Length: 328
Image (tube, rainbow, N blue to C red; front, side, top):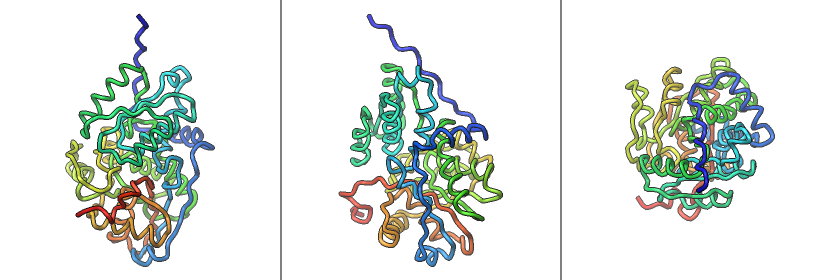
């Protein structure tokens, strides 16, 4: 009988240090794209602010998630990498991890809920990821993943409750701070909190006083409510169109955001759809509803007169059912 695989290494879940942020920056250099920062006079006029859009929809894999996945995969030892990597994801993190694993030449096992967007499922397969389906609940994701990890010995790379992931995501904000001087504020969408936590850390170390705030759908506002109460809330099945933001904060990301007293603004489903369409029409770029949440906040919140950096998180969506074509 063949030997069972050794247990995979436990993932780090401490707040990333400055040294780890620097290491992540060096590790992804030349592997992840340095995405452009765009502007729009129309959106400036509508928001009465000066907006700078860090376009992670142009990142490898179509979303910021590649930064964290790349840092995690290429930070593994050769021995650990040879076992492969595994995660659970509704799409963007899964395809990012599959792509990073393919670049390193190792296997990626992706547990995906049955209702994951078809386009994101197709991308995982295209990048060579091996999909295991599960019911669309957090419990089902976690139990299915545990089985996959036990069978393969793969290293679990959590979508956001992972020091390596948060450190990798921080590089988007660091680049924005380097490319745009004198920002007053940075706004990032928040689901699991990896991108927003990375923004908080980069602003702390490199931002010279820039504020960081989050953007969340009203139908999935567990981060806003939890931070106000001072307790991490468990997710309920949210129905927001922003499918990338249907997860809840993890212990790691909740701790980072709470320590920074991070404010979260919320927007309605109609505002999310309107912002998505506005960007498609006026900026001529494809973004997904999850990315539009931060833009909708900038258009509806009192940031008048501020220089605001917006982390445009991704552009992966089902082109057969556009947000403004969905039934009410």
